[in-house]
Image (tube, rainbow, N blue to C red):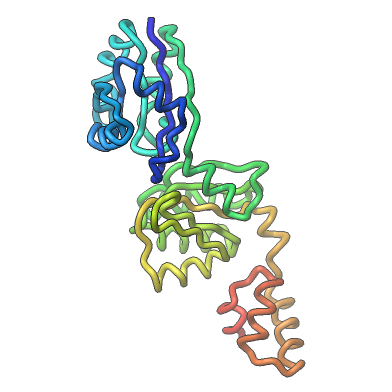
Length: 270
């Protein structure tokens, strides 16, 4: 009886493959890969020639028995295109069935866009909620966000670049103004982590349309409540700053930094 190894692969930089993962990928009899072409590039980089079988969202049930049969004769590695298999990637059904049939299932930990984005976000990491990919349809996405508006833990989600602006706008509408981090192309050449308020992220990515893989991290309700001033307090502080003789742009920036409001929001108050 073979072992099913759940192997984390690089999310961008190929140097992030662990020594253990490299050894396992070289010794198993078969690799179940989300995209065999993508995995082939990784294997070539490390001089490995292990056979791979495609196992992705639209064939995962049809390929299930073939992979389980391979486990009868030897070890199998499960990999996704990037990161740890099973997190918003194919793998759950195979892992569950392997466990049910008594095969050992062993994790080979490594890169994860989810955790990488969380720890560099600057937001609380002691407790968080992983949302997977936000719904593609606007109404469903807003309902999802509205349903967790009171969640006190940090929120983490994956998002496609062409939906990022819509998701940021929906988050601001349903959750209110909150701090966020948009981690883009982590470990790759054009890696970027934008940190700021949701309104500032919307402005930034309106000016600079995003590309690549994106992980979105948003402050939970507890931090948002503690940080965000009400409008009356913002107006009082802005008026006080203006009376001191500083320019409006300078006053707005200073108040924004303390209040939890976006600089442009404060500047635009009558």
